[in-house]
Image 1: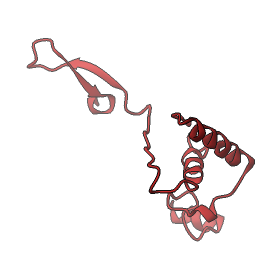
Image 2 (image 1 turned 90 degrees about the horizontal axis):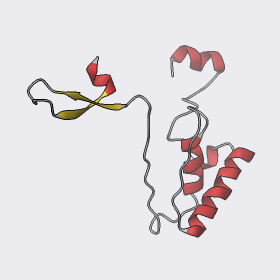
Image 3 (image 1 turned 120 degrees about the vertical axis):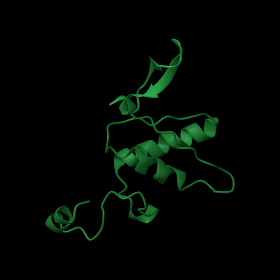
Length: 108
């Protein structure tokens, strides 16, 4: 976060850092709702997917829910999908027409 924004809002540190402790997470009804759904998924032994708008608190909600699991019994796996990495095919000049996946951002 830019120092000017931090000073303007009176922040002493980055408010949306990923290293925020469990105790510092604001427990909102929406956050508790994610936790209830997470617990249900765990009871079923299922796989869950958390989706939402950028900045809506997906990562924080998952970290909040994961905090209640014993680390020697469970492992979490974060898989991030971003629309900034669209895969498309484009023939390479030396490939005689074979298609190779190229990240969208690499063709600029």
